[in-house]
Structure formats: C-alpha cells, structure tokens
Image 1 (cartoon, rainbow, N blue to C red):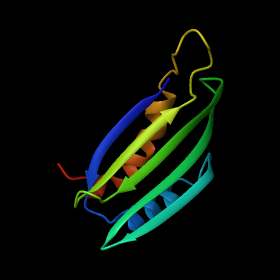
Image 2 (cartoon, helix red, strand yellow):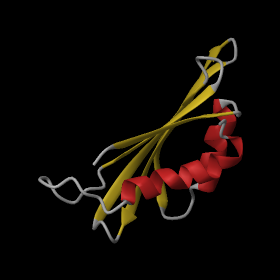
Image 3 (cartoon, rainbow, N blue to C red):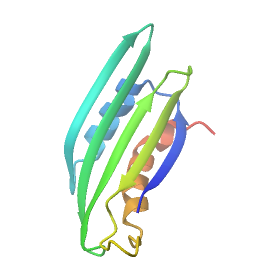
Image 4 (tube, rainbow, N blue to C red):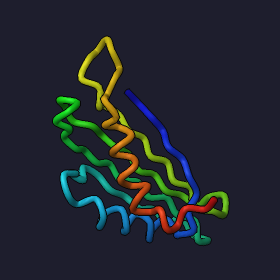
Amino acid sequence: MNEVFRFDISLQPDAAITLVRNGLTEQSELLHQELHDLGDGRMIGTLVYERYYLRAGNQAALVVIVDNFSGVSKVRLISAGSSNSMVFKFDWGAGKSFASSVEKILSSYILK
C-alpha cells in the first residue's frame, strides 16, 4: 500500500532533514540520504528509511522529501511496501504510523 502525506513547515529543508535524521533513530534504518543546495536559498533533501513491523509481518519503506522551491518548505512523506500481500493491499496502519512518526518530529514547525 502506498500513501502520501503532505504539509508545509517553517524550517529550511536542511534543518528539517537534520531533525528527522536525529529523531528517527529507533527501529528505523536510514537507507539513503541526500541534500542538494541549488543556490539562491533553494534546497531539496531526501531521506529513505525502512522499518520492520511485526503486526504487518514485513518491512515498510518511507521516503521523506523536503524542498523550498516555492518559497515555503514543503514536506512529502511517501510510505510504501507495508502490505504483506500481492493481492490485498492492506498494511494494518504501518505506513501511516511510519509517516506519523516524522510528522510528530516536525509538528512544532507545521504551518496551518
């Protein structure tokens, strides 16, 4: 099952990426990270995580993308691979739980 969560934050992408990296240490394995400074204050950062969920019976992936191309920092959280069946795409809430852990880390900076 694949889910996408979106929200805007008041942090620059580099600061947001650092907060997430420091906050997602338990039970999550950082598979990939990158941060690109495009000049003129524009940046994009990407983190890719994996976590095992006992209740789903498999591993879930989470991609975190933060950019400020439009003037405000936009966060996209994409959860994937948390379904344990090829036929039934039901993940018992693992993808949403994984994304929620990042949302909680950044909650003080979310713009309403």
